[in-house]
Image 1 (cartoon, rainbow, N blue to C red):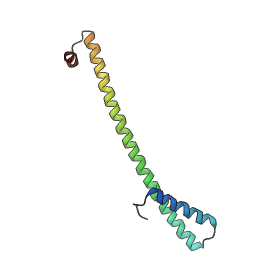
Image 2 (cartoon, helix red, strand yellow):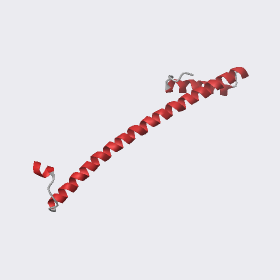
Image 3 (cartoon, one colour):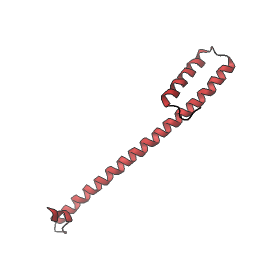
Length: 97
């Protein structure tokens, strides 16, 4: 089985194999051969799904971390302004205004 097979194509082939096996019209040797092909396709589909899940988790984590950085910098700016108002010291942004 090729690792380069597209998920949708592998799934279509797997569905056809299941239909053929469920029909009961195949000779034993042919049924075993088709079953083996089905197992390989199933593994290929599982691998593709796992790879997609890892990519999604990575991208989600990256977006969340990027959001945390901007939230922290916003929180830091607000904290600096509060300190400046209370006389706790000026910040660079106070001098820019």
